[in-house]
Length: 276
Image (cartoon, rainbow, N blue to C red):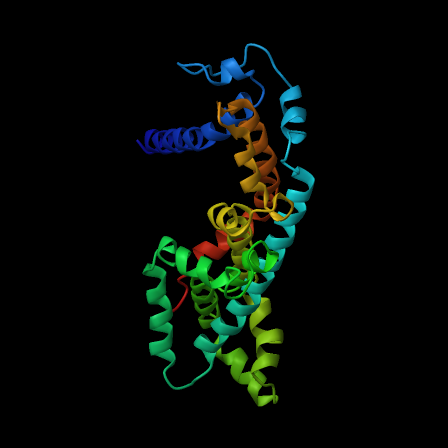
């Protein structure tokens, strides 16, 4: 009976894994089909002929500027992730280990902002950063500054800092350490999984950013990789085989990063509610 239950459990997990992996399989196989086969209905699951030249054509497609787009995305994602790490560490430690008036109320208000959909703030943000006000339209600044702090990252860091043993903090205070020294030498080394988790989540979010860069930029030389995929949609329709090749350019680097850091990511999510 136990063996049958184990087989059933593993069979269920296998089916789930196949369902999750199918979109990646479809993306890769379609990227090697010709246009007619990629657009065929009912769909063809396996290419009748492999067109490796699709990747070259997608990379050199007019007005895509893939090399520049990758540099733009790496710059924006790196800067945004570092900014989020800095703000979430400082704010998370303050909410977890520092006593000040209104701490609970302020944190509650911050959590309430999680219920505001991003679409509700899209137009006000655009107006604020337009040429008439801040003048950040068509700049890297507009793609970075609005995302330098996130409430989820602050919440996650707070939960981890609450899990740091109070004895270690009291011992550091007896040695004359202030909050910054305690944060740097005592707390941060114990919350590395949270830092990796935040870096992965925010880096992935910045890497996949599409709507905001699409409306706040018009110069293709400062646009990220996700927006460049739009170039494959023409008035005559979408070039599906090239779209999938371009999507492969975008997805494969982030998959490689995730496979390297997945242990820290899973540990960070599992320990989110350690105390609090």
